[in-house]
Length: 123
Image (cartoon, rainbow, N blue to C red; front, side, top):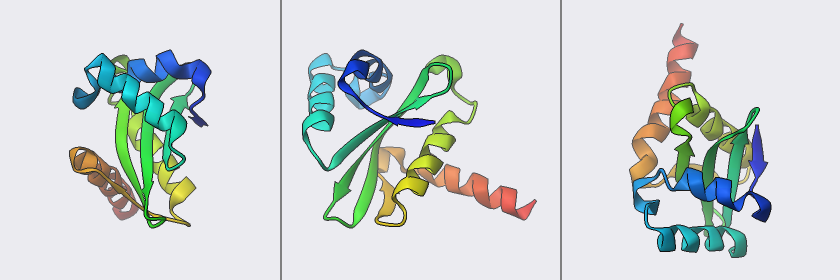
């Protein structure tokens, strides 16, 4: 289930986001977390089952778009559908108010999540 990021989960969130290539640098990662904490248009969520296994972050643009800009899953839990579950949860949460989309570096994965749904409908 998605839970909203809170400061007491900072180390876990930073660890998950550090798996993204553009967030490898510690200073950049600290800036990103600070932006999620201070900018009201940036929203970070963590995926929790027994443990926190993933993170997904988005920003609201012009009160029109909800742009997914970060998505990361603990490497030992990849390929088990957690990323897809996070995308679906964000879509369900934001689609009534915003057009949900993804940044270019996440677009292929985001599109694949939608394709998975279409394939299930065709079965």
